[in-house]
Length: 605
Image 1 (cartoon, rainbow, N blue to C red):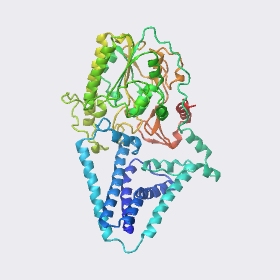
Image 2 (cartoon, rainbow, N blue to C red; image 1 turned 135 degrees about the horizontal axis):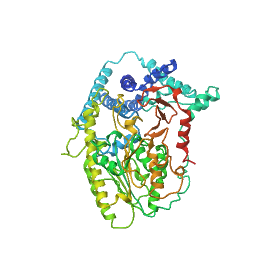
Image 3 (cartoon, helix red, strand yellow; image 1 turned 45 degrees about the horizontal axis):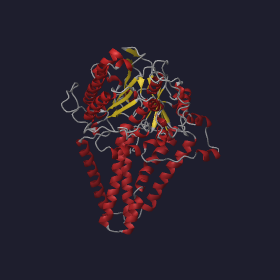
Image 4 (cartoon, rainbow, N blue to C red; image 1 turned 60 degrees about the horizontal axis):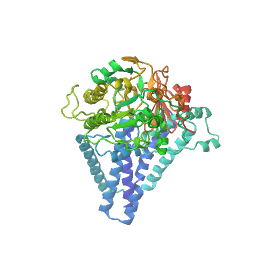
């Protein structure tokens, strides 16, 4: 039975190596012997390593309960689970370019009503069928191996060889990491649950180092430490006539859909009252960093520090200090991501969710509740700050009976069908119909403001947390969170209020970082330099940017006109064109990256 456990583990390792081929699609293959050596040893060794996660348990069970049916059943279930998890990881990686992590698992567990992950019945049935097929194959192979085990115990040679592969993989990576040979180290992120060995200090003691390469990598490491936020206390006098502020954000709203056809109410409002910022970037390619940058005005790399200390943004603190009524109405829960512990951590009685059975119905309900809240609020004398966070485009859905403006439209979203050859038009049309629906709800809000005569005394901001891609790059990227291209981080930004030209258009590069200085220096009358509390500038008072930083859950990107530098916490990086074609490492802009690193460490002590 012990010998069967060994051979069965090797078979499972082989299957995992085959699954790894799905990651190969996104790899730039090595250009050196050392790089190929690492790829080979890791491909084989890591497949075996993943089986070691359940091998000791199976071996122990075989020793304690040596019953063939029981051992086969446990072995098949454990191995099938590990294979299914790696396949699931390839699907996550295919969409977002990062592996399953605690954040994703937390979302999957807590997303009981499909607010974040909305899988169709077809997708779920196909997934169940796939798991069933894996279990069936594993049962068949397990029985055949048990009945026809090789007569010679060759495991005494095979097992040590597999362990040597693991050791060689980690040894090569440690050496390459010490010399900053990215041809090797850039491969590590493609393997799930892979934590390669590093030993820079030890290699330096042995005289193995590359100071010039080390300086380049040093510029890409994220700082840490105690918060120094804000740099100076705010000095705010407020305006003589208290200005209201209304911030409307739409989840997953593409920059090129804020037009007359897709968003007619927003477009009409912008033409009559607002200024369009047509080259505006979110601070992230996902909700967490997008909303974070909108309220804090600093990079999403500070998320963990703010969350662990429950530090609210100075914007919210100042609004509370000036006795603003806060009306926070969001479609998706404000507990995942943990905006209740960051952005709104100081807001008492926070309304954390909207109670309705679907995303479009929640958009309708939050609009109803906002209008009711505002009606009650207008009986007092205090100014208001409103935050309306819509979600229907994120779920690609409109309520039943809502007209299909864009056709043909995909009837059911099935993520398993998405690939590089898939025609995105019906999928994009479904998304546009959802945007058109949400625009109708925003129209209700804007019409109500106008009918109440509040527009002249209210700063209105309409934007998005991030964009949404439909394979725009022809590299099989869908949705958001996968890259830092325009499709995923460039968003609409319309601002109406005192000082903003009606029907105006600004084409300089702006960022979500610029909104907090705009609100604090405008309606709230703060005299501080934006550098005291933000990475941005007033939207109307700077000349634009030559780079923009956008964060993700696991990394961040620096966007320039002709390139994007994608960095990783390990110190690895890649430089790509705006269309995500690879550039050489010599394209790294050291001057810009030095500025970036200062900014992502500036609010630490």
